Image (cartoon, rainbow over all chains, first blue to last red; front, top):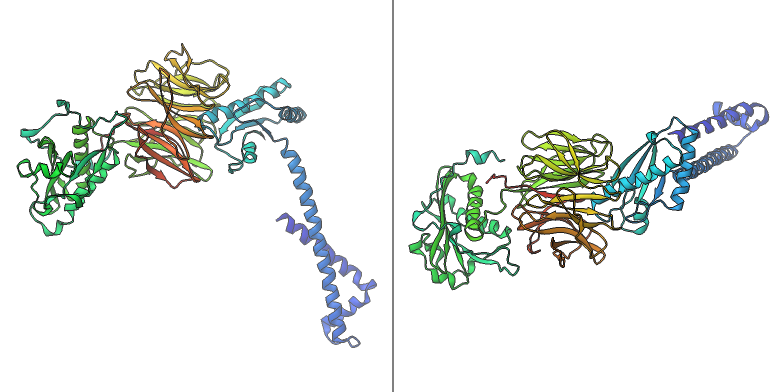
Amino acid sequence: MRRYGILLAVFMAFVLAVTLTSGCSTPKKATKEDVTKSGTKPGLSDEELAKQRAEQEARERALREQAIRDQEARDRAAAAEAASLKDLSRIYFDFDRAELSSEAREILGKVAAQLKASPKKALTIEGNCDDRGTNEYNLALGQQRADAAARYLQNLGIDRKRIKTISYGEERPVCSEATEACWHKNRNATFVYR
Amino acid sequence: MRRNSIVLFFVFVLWLAAMVPAADGKVYINIDSPSAQKFPIAITPFKNMNNASSQESLSPWFADTLGKTLEITGFFNILDRKGFLVDQTRLGISTENIQFPAWTGIGAESLVTGGFTVSGRDLTLECRLFDVVQGKLIVGKRYTGKVEERKEMIVRFAQEILVALTGEKGLFDTKIAFTGKRGGSSEIHYVNFDGTEPVKLTNYHSITLSPKWSPDGKQISFLSYKDGAPDLHVMDLNRRTTRKILSTGRLNLPATWSTDSKRMLVTSSKDGSEDIYILNLADSRMTRLTNDPAIDVSPTWSPDGKQIAFVSDRGGTPQIYVMDATGANVRRLTFEGGYNTSPAWHPRSNRIAYEGRAGGTFQVMVLETEGGTPVQLTTNGRCENPAWSPDGRYIAFVSRLGGKSRVCVMNSNGTNVRVIHEGLDAYVSPTWSPHLNFY
């Protein structure tokens, strides 16, 4: 929705600019407008009029396309930013383990910094597992993963009362393929700010 | 359980002449023998006693339905009627009219004959079971009711046959509950032993797991996130009301009920790590049984209540351990394979069924609690979450094969695998009801 809004605004601005400037700096334009309004102005052939219309349409099309390209670039930038934030929203674990990797500890350090920077924020840590193994055992394992992350944040000086943990075991997978890549994604602790 | 069994008028007539009590000595089918052969039984078309021409089709219907019902048990070889040597149109149904050698001659050890009388909507059904080797009647029954109650009558006589030949009435009056997943949510369902009458029990659109049927048959406990956290709930099956019995803001998992249905083993992480507790339902008092920073989960009581098997990863990988009911004397039971979980204690012996890693996948195993070598019962796909039937003769489990998940039942020796529910995205945690006496 917003994207169309921006497109529309860009287009409207263009039309306005053309309208405002057409009177003095582009006589052909004025002529054309006269012709299209009255259809009686002599001096320009139908061919020339058609050519002018085509040029005008081409300019408008180019501007629309530019606006779309700009918007796409903005979207890409936003997605990249979201992705870099997303990196801070999860840590990953080895199969059947709840120990924190060095990468997980590094992310938790950043999470702790964020929490210190915004003292009013609270955090829920959701523990997840891949779907290999037993569903009940995985519920327990998910709790251990969430607790391991919570303990680490606590050691970094975050008040334990600001952190809630919940295990979803293997019940909330991010993906469902039977591949190591997908299993890896599903073995995580996810940070949700409240 | 089923209302219509109340209105069903069954008159049991015992033929005094030849009623043989099951305790009389002869064991026809030794279920627990690992080498048990299927018991060959012949079932004749039932005789249309008053020759009501409109009811001709009932004659084979009774025989076929009884045959199918017995076949579900996995104990019987139902002999093909095409091979019968006697003229089926002139069959006698009582002892004096039966040529026993004609039945032993085709390999039958037992014979069922039947006769029916239809008058309006009223049905009278006579069924007899014979030992054709000894040439005598084992059990005979007469049932009266409505024509539409004929299936119940047949199941009742199947139970009589099972009592006479195996010493127990079978599991036709039991149900199996399980978690079925679809989309992102999971709900509790149940289905009859024979796979009929599926019912969706919950409708929370949440994560609802680990149903456990109470031994009195009246309640099912389960874990549900329906209020946001993994809390324990108990559903009253008659009133269909649910009450929350444990909510700690952390993980709570229900496990086996005590035989009096007053206490329950649970896993809770309320005090830190996941440990095993006894939850007293009357006052919600919890008694802690394990105290270890590792995961302790999925406890199951021994039939005498004196021991508990459970899963722990205190040794580095999830393995099955056994402890006294007080929590003392913990010892490791499984050593083969790096991942052994879901223990279920046999209701009558010191055997534990569980799922273990075998050949890169998971299979249902059985192991004596004294130790020894595990026996692998399943081989196809991935088989998990074993649950014993109340008589210990069957195991319900979840099978995943070719991308499909199914709830299955097999005989305790791993034969006679039947699908009892399929079609949802995935299944977990079957639990077997006690006898609910709806037949």
